[in-house]
Length: 178
Ligand SMILES: *[C@@H]1O[C@H](CO)[C@@H](O)[C@H](O)[C@H]1NC(C)=O
Ligand SMILES: *[C@@H]1O[C@H](CO)[C@@H](O)[C@H](O)[C@H]1NC(C)=O
Image 1 (cartoon, protein in one colour):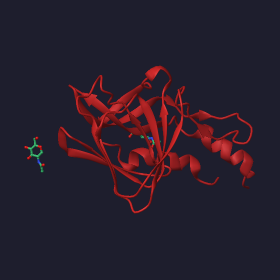
Image 2 (spheres, protein in one colour; image 1 turned 135 degrees about the horizontal axis):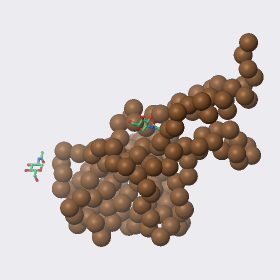
Image 3 (tube, helix red, strand yellow; image 1 turned 90 degrees about the vertical axis):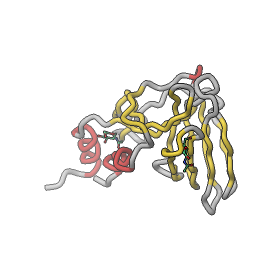
């Protein structure tokens, strides 16, 4: 006999092993920007917030501001540093990130459920920064969220280069209908 779905979904979440969010980060080493796959140290936990109680959540820390940007199709943002340590959440469109000092590594970030990145290549740590182009045929919508006090969230570097789809698709596990 099947348990009713309300219990099934919260049981599924608690039964799962600890899951951590992985995000592609624009970081820096030896004065040059890099792309890395970061695993957030804070694991997902279970929300008790009314409306989403029993579902998976993870805190991304405190933010200092929130900006909504609309970038036209085929826009070249040029080479620039992250203005401050910040989350960028692409909700639609397409961003293409390249590195002026490393022409072997690049990342396509699609707007949507896998559109979260962290940008940390500020002027203090990277001489040139990175280049972002928006090669899509639609606008790209991005939310820019600098962290409070410029804090870089606690993380572990999984590897250099952007996270692969298999490293970010784990969130689907918690999005499946019970
Ligand atoms: C990549 O960068 C290296 C070092 O700067 C350079 O020698 C090489 O020509 C570049 N390759 C391409 C395809 O741009
Ligand atoms: C993050 O990466 C680890 C190690 O590759 C993986 O086990 C985990 O499922 C990933 N998390 C997500 C949300 O995909």
